[in-house]
Length: 110
Length: 240
Image (cartoon, rainbow over all chains, first blue to last red; front, side, top):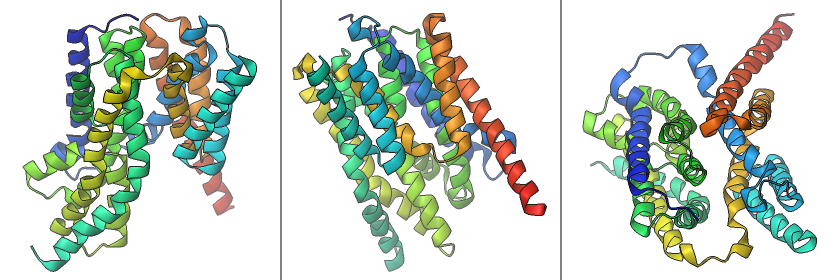
């Protein structure tokens, strides 16, 4: 496994810490009572659902551990996680269902 | 401190407690994943104390493992945290009048759980004073945030002893999918997530993980646009 460079790591940690604090402080701390434009709020509402799926999609389709080959066990686990999370609206239940289906399909298919 | 001030603090503590069921496993998972990626125990704990935002931390670790450039890691993880600016905006009418140092503390501790509990409680109790509102907020924070640090530490200590058969490479994808799925309650959210996936796969060839930034922007614009369409259609139906 490659080594993460200590200086890069701390740059990211501190940058992310300051940036996150800035985002949390920007309105309560600095802007005060002024209203934000509606178009901006409308875009901000979708940041989490726009970034996180894009982050995991390549890891689901082309996992590095299988050398980038699509892996049925991981695809099944991803599908089960999404379905359980969507229907049950419970994050922990979805994580456990996803992990269980991953191990089961790795055992049965692998 | 009046009796009612003290009771709003403890009400916050009680409302924060159920989140431990989620925070503790999630924190342990972060600790394990971070040490697997090569961080030592001190670095892993520092990450949780400095950043105190689970999803952004997982994003940063995942991209660090993929050797993405620093700027792309910062941009992606901060984009995940953009919702904190929304929380900040929506808390401002309630606690914006507090002294600066208290607002700074509140800002540091603005996380999904403290925001969600507080905004619901403030709407339910419009008669609360500024001090009651702040005490409630820090009441929720009391169980939630220290458990994030401690469970990260526990995960980091368990960390490196986990065998490869546990397929931990897939823990981050499963965690994120589990976080996203319950959010897909409107057509706009579903459209944003779907276009993000499609764009991320199409632009996966782009260097330095910049395809993710395209997917994120595209997803946000899709979500905002679909929301406009659906609200317009709803108002048209309402007036017809």
